[in-house]
Image 1 (cartoon, one colour):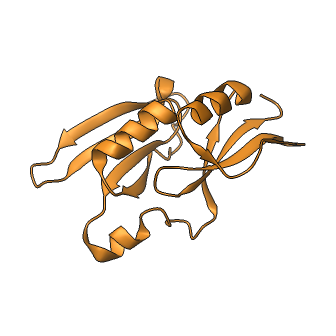
Image 2 (tube, one colour; image 1 turned 60 degrees about the vertical axis):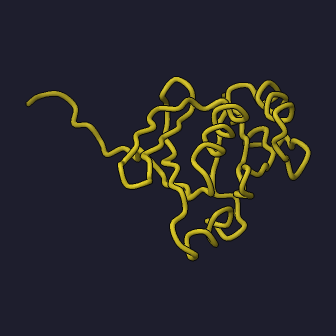
Image 3 (tube, rainbow, N blue to C red; image 1 turned 135 degrees about the vertical axis):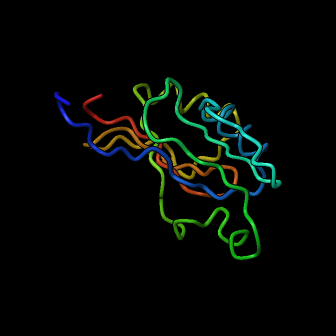
Length: 136
């Protein structure tokens, strides 16, 4: 085999959610992600993957909470810190779209040396940065 070896890629990150369908709706409608896969696993669970439009970047595996411990982690998987970073090439466009879709921003947009940024919460309270890097 010749050519450049392929480096490992972070393909999916699991996000524990309260309900598959409400999570799919939020991520596809409010954040503009695409539904990449929704497969019934036959045991009451589903394999649900959403990812940024165009298939670029890491996808989110939306996993419905099972049991009390997982249910308690919904919305608090990063201990109240920003745990997810959604990069954009047009901050104003995406901020306006997300605001119109009811996304709750915790601050006004800031313009920092590294780019334009604002912290928002998903439907469960997980914190995200909407970020347009300065070099974008």
